[in-house]
Image (tube, rainbow, N blue to C red):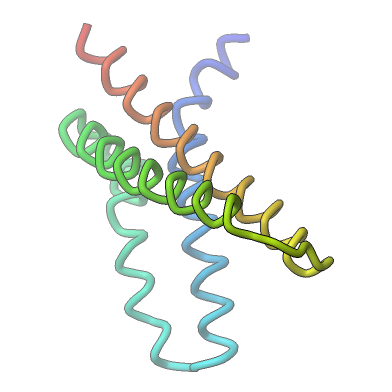
Length: 119
């Protein structure tokens, strides 16, 4: 149980790193060398895994909560304006919704980790 608690604080960083790696490989297949600047987004998360910082953790959490909140509003407004559901749209709405809410949950988890470290 202690092992799970010890490594559970790294789950949000690994999640965001896996999203960045997936984004990089998808863009790299289509555009080639133009995808390499995407890897810059991974630097703060790798830094948090190597040398954790409370300030960086809290700022990453707040930034991604704000971005995820915006994406949730965009997702809900898009969901309400759809008239006909084709199979592609249903799949997109399902995967997009899972991605948006997973980002929000991981961002809240990062903020929770930074608050737990300060008290």
